[in-house]
Length: 159
Image (cartoon, rainbow, N blue to C red):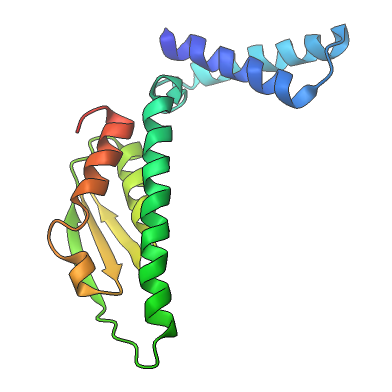
């Protein structure tokens, strides 16, 4: 029920924010579109925590702030490698096991690895990710533990 109400509230705010017009015909069309969207979503039985993640938004925002700092730090490492006369990269492909339980948390974790310069998630198979890294030391066992823990907490609520 909370997800249902959250979806309605988000759609109303989204419609009002994008519309900018508050006359009767526009509000009437907006209400009709929202009713149709909620009905269609309920009929497909896809109203869940992933459809309306409004309750976990504060955790997600905190995670993205932390991730932005990590991206900046990784950019500095890749920049140093790029401007050196003799590149000192040691590419490695590693398997990383994740504690994320939901598909959404696994996707956030895999995308976070890919967003971080110098690493790319190549494959996701269940709770195991294949990651390519520019430096073997950056892909050592435990290198992704904090990101895994933070993404699991942000999405699943468990660390």
